[in-house]
Length: 226
Image (cartoon, rainbow, N blue to C red):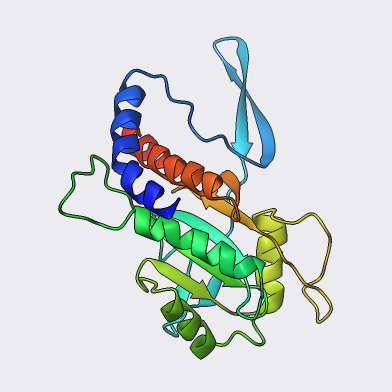
């Protein structure tokens, strides 16, 4: 499936560009409606949906650099998952599937790709006490990560858990980010350049990873049309 994602991506890009020009592509939907504004125009009432914009968070990556997801990655599409290094089953599969996206969008000058994709992979530990910077670096190296385009992040547990629950909505159960609070989710979240949520995917399903790859292309085209 990983090979299929990597090989078929340029072909899918071509057809998406072609179909988008004909106005036939269904763009990734928005998630989490904050409010609906009422606008009076020309004696008529119009309604404008205001979608949730994910707030910023500052964490530390595997290169021991403090990074802001909104400021340092301004204008980039983000693909975010949550993991912890000592996870025995789910996280290795999740990280392996995330690596399919890294492979799929790897620049290859031997083939022609009609779309320049500007996105960042983000993996945030839910066990920051144990997952220190050196631990994250070793984990990232094990998966042959491109450190510029895929960050493994650690930081304050309460901030991470608030971000996962209240900004990204990856889990419904309440919690305070305290010592007895623990989040474990296989969801991958797609954020557009404006930090709207545009997709949730089962990170353990290779077919959904392919869907995520397609949606990344669509968001890139959407931004170009703007």
